[in-house]
Amino acid sequence: MATATHDINDLKRRMQGALTALKQELSGLRTGRASAHLLDPIQVDAYGQSMGLNQVATVSVPQPRMISVQVWDRTMVQPVEKAIMAANLGLTPSTDGQVIHLRIPELNQDRRKELAKVAHKYAEAAKVAVRHVRHDGMETLKKLEKDHKISQDEHKRYTADVQKATDQSISDIDQMLATKEKEIMTV
Image 1 (spheres, rainbow, N blue to C red):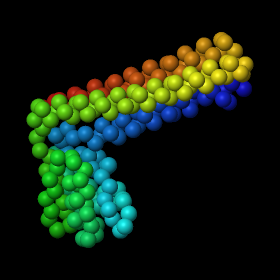
Image 2 (image 1 turned 90 degrees about the horizontal axis):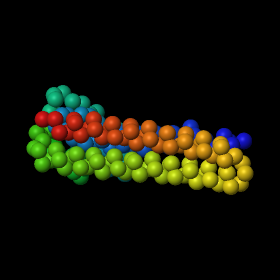
Image 3 (image 1 turned 30 degrees about the vertical axis):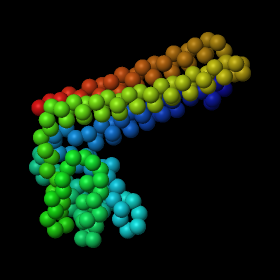
């Protein structure tokens, strides 16, 4: 009965969603090396609607410090350039026909520190999301005990499960942040 209304797997899945979102945000932070994922969040105004860059072009990394964007439709070259500039990634497009080249500049120490702060901000937002999931789980358990659907012992056991899942998620976030920070700060 209690497992039907208290689902630890659902809480873990929701916490995992925060980790997945963090991973995607961190992959968008530029580290001085070219990565096709850097352009993933870019939306292009194409054919009267907003589309992902990967729906109008092929993104490749021909060199360690270069990203190439092969636009499929010649009429979309200018909107793609505009979207790249609007994304504020610090990249300047250089166009050659239907191919847009983006050179990844070296990061100076100040820019690295700024990127590390942004990574910390993303990690803190993910931790807050995990804590919200934890709070929801704890509130559900309190209500179930109050309504006599679970015993006090079950409440304690389930609370420990929720806390364990929370601690694991926070630990995973810290690990992801440490890895990204090392990647950013390594010259």
